[in-house]
Length: 315
Image 1 (cartoon, helix red, strand yellow):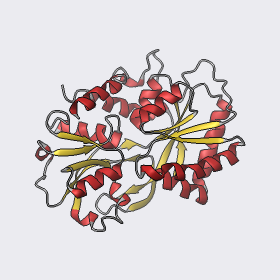
Image 2 (tube, rainbow, N blue to C red):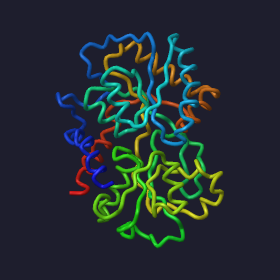
Image 3 (cartoon, rainbow, N blue to C red):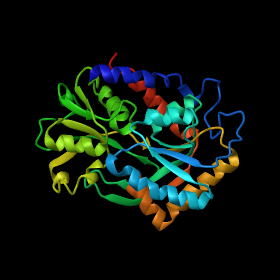
């Protein structure tokens, strides 16, 4: 598993030159497209998703969103569910997809490769990490944390040494990058000092912790609410060993050559859907989104900083 993680870190290596938010051609961060000819007009909008939870049902949940978008845009909308975010990034680059729902780290990679521009950031309700209950505030950021059982012997980050930890992919902001950097600050190397188990889905990570397959799990706050029905006492029997700094919420990213007219149409359609109670229920079922706000590339400079820091892990 360690070799698999290290091999996948080559992907993150592509972001190491992103200091101060500059691309390879010296362009500064901003909401500008990489494309010199932004004239693509979609006849059919193709959107890509990757499961972060309940992978088996995501496609069924995403199809109603496609129907709503089709109604708003006046063209067919096709929904595609794939196994990993790198597939979404490459599909945007090869123009097989028009839109990708990308987490921050994967968006930065796609933008660096001139495969995607950010249109929107998701809004979610804030979460109280002690109770797992949502607040009434809609925010464009979230936190990650290292979830452990109350009765474990893990009382500090240093106690994670020698333990088995459930991770998401090496490009997952909440499931690896932010927690691994936080551990490094405390002197624990996520590659050398622990045994990593890669899981697909934050629900699977919480389940692995509860079943004893891992000693700790890096998940978004608060992933426990996904499995609360299965583990009714989960808030009483687990806690977060630590929380990370704020992580920008997921993006809705677009292929750069799409015309400004259509970028604006897509942006307005998503915002309208997020403001409609019926639409909000659909997007909440997919990724717990409760709305969208316009975004710019500069919002992800912190992601570039973490992408550089995470590459020092294991060396």
